[in-house]
Image (cartoon, rainbow, N blue to C red; front, side, top):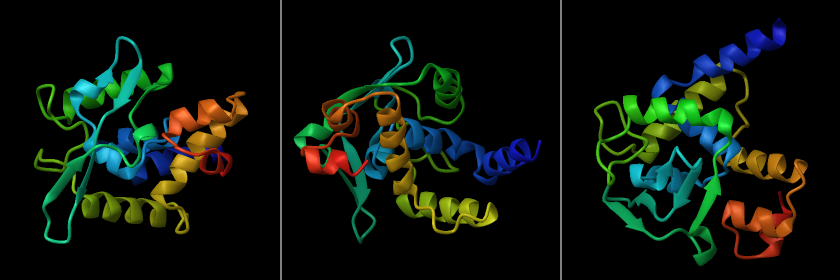
Length: 172
């Protein structure tokens, strides 16, 4: 019962609009910029896949910088765990922008989610549950570790996480 209460507290610490983003980061391992750049057309619920085709960042003037992923290896199609499919589908219905070009993860007013808004929500949630040293990028490491624990080899990890080198994949 205590572990269930801790899990529920963690689940409730992040606002509902961002819960799916956190789970995609933790179980699929997308980079923050890839999460921010994810479009509806990149999510295929029927085939349980997410295609990483672009990333989105903001420059110091607040302008959107949209382009290909960090490396050529960053362009990939990865499997979505079946347990996330329902949550991802519900998220698309409730929070994502409409149309194929619509962003999956959005801010309170429905515009593209700003990195500083995500960071503030993450800081608040991790503080609330007492994990102040946990960074959003650590969820990417978790995804790699989970994939490795199911038997994924170095090449599979490289592909899943969009790594161009074996050295990067071996860190996970």
